[in-house]
Image (cartoon, rainbow, N blue to C red):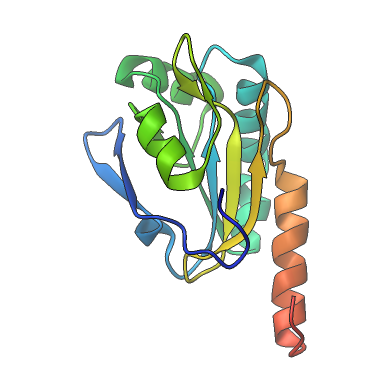
Length: 162
């Protein structure tokens, strides 16, 4: 598992526009939110992604960028993006075992998918907060992310340590 202060591992995922996204490099210079979600079929994951979309402007105001990742195929991911009007990168085709080995996420055996796992990263790509779930519930929510980043920014401005 990744702990506060750990560097987020270098991982590359496919996006639905044919491009690749390299994490944490794609988030460098900003606070990053990395969401590994179970799949388009999961109502809790759908609710989480919709919530982050609704908070898109507020997240941008605190300097946060969001990336979501699942094992879903490209077609399923495209449909999910369209269904919820997602404006942040959503990657597909992640290998559950590779992700688990890199970040410590729990993996469901059959069918094989990544359990909900979320990270807040600092502008240097280090873990600020990690949230691991072993089942359907327990995940990052936008208000908590915004609150944490606001606290970190205000605390850094005052010269204090988090």
